[in-house]
Length: 134
Image (tube, rainbow, N blue to C red; front, side, top):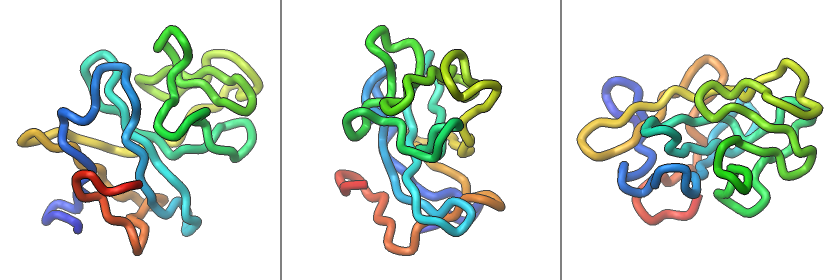
């Protein structure tokens, strides 16, 4: 379901604990089915395409777990690259000067929404309702 302003409902705000597990969701990125993820870091919700900037592999080491042991950086489970959660910039590892592909999100009325862009679209079979598997 897409709202009047183009927003796609993702989850309840309370589902994203500070530096906790992410909400993973399906989308189309440049026409290709991929996953995205949203997490709360330093009070803000951020979202990215679930792809390492080094090699196009998913980042999470367990579904929904993207942060390193100290819960400070997003870490690529395959390459060990570290990314700043706030802006997706590569901090260390084989990602070089790359950055994660950001997805615009906002919180309103106790819900989190994401916004499609020229590169990101809702997946045709996506069901972002509460409690639905992503």
